[in-house]
Image 1 (spheres, one colour):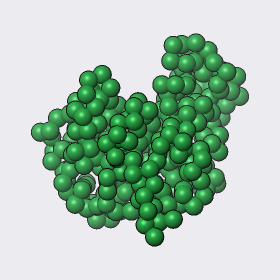
Image 2 (cartoon, helix red, strand yellow):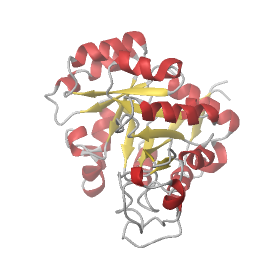
Image 3 (cartoon, helix red, strand yellow):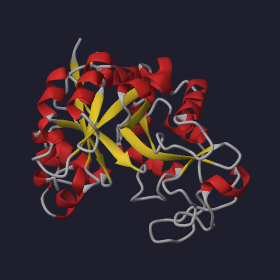
Length: 311
């Protein structure tokens, strides 16, 4: 029997478990958008804890975020760690490129907070991140598509898939890439239908409309991530096509040039109706943000966090 559940900040750790997780997976993967807006917290909740730390991840879960965006890199000895930059200089009390450091060396470092002060938080591995996130929040793994020196194209994705398969986390993991369909299929293999693969829509992609059509025909993605600097781009003109296909519209409000300047900054420092509200009115139902707490508060006021469930 259908009923409505209003998701608030207490939703996080308490109710995104077991059967509820399956419901969320099913609804997110289903066609159509509805009114519910899915919140993706950028670099976990990096405003209130060291970015991409386990503490930031826990904060995002407690807030009631649906998705946490995080960044992956490979250490010198082949381990996957969670960090935005290619080096540890900015976010830890150490120095050096991640690719030149072993996991043991990185684990000896402490993460810095947003003011540059050293904390007790350590750089997490992907496995540690999954342990905290499993059954509680979707993981969006950014930087997965970068080519690594000395390795074939797609090497990082294959490393990630190995970990995700072993930890049974494929279905709750999101990849956002601008690869043509044939490349995505070749590298992901059967996992392309198991993960949540969101193609990028950006004017820099050659033959953009054909690229979108091929994904709609061959994969029917859960969502497409749009990046448009203004409303005169080919990308923006493709919004109705993607909406008509049933795929969700995904946008990173963290960037002015991805949102025609209707970003977090307009929303937080001016009027949310001109930022997040504008994006929602255009049909976007997945919004990545640096200000998850503020976005969730706004969505609750606008009745955009009412979630359909079958329990």
